[in-house]
Length: 296
Ligand code: R5P
Image (cartoon, rainbow, N blue to C red; front, side, top):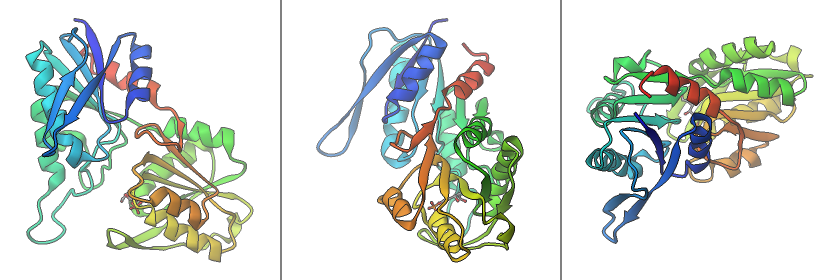
């Protein structure tokens, strides 16, 4: 069966790179917004293949969620039989339990919705915390690309004497793996979140590493507050300005500017969400997982 790639939501560069590596046709999708904010999805190409790959990073999930589901329906109306969703950043993974009475577990609801409209899912380092496997919530086949090998290479090639810092216990899984791959020391901090934009972190004794370059690593940089708070502590300890690496640069509102202003030496992200800070290309890792689905 022939396959082609469709993209929207600013993922053109990544989608093009995937299409070149997979040697398949690439096409954009037009989303027209009506004055009343309804949307109409239009496939630009006349050639909808039976296998389709939709590349959509879900960093503004509420505004692109509905057009994404419409795209799936539209592709099927035009002949698609299998649709793989490549969501390099997978939204709605953090509300993985009911934190306050009356709240819903949106990680489960979102997964159920996506599973109804797509036949398979490929993503990059989803925020797995209390949900341990995507298959606990997604009923479709799924594959995960792990950024660690490529990020570790980037650290080895670009940073002198790095010391990795994970801002909270959730980051330990990634930071430990990265540190082993790059053969560098690491520490994991404790974080208490008081609100969406109010976090507190505690830094253990890191006197022995003061001559190293601190490298803050987290899966997601959203408001940037987690990293900003960590930077403030590092300053008090007399550490050098850190390099901040995030797999997914969500950068809500002015987060990127705020993080720079707080004293980040450099901010680096992978290309799961298009942003000027993208310096680490994960396209080959994503291709490997698409192929591993054995649907093409
Ligand atoms: C949450 O546990 C994640 O791993 C990140 O630490 C978090 O999303 C970062 O958010 P923010 O940039 O808003 O502090």
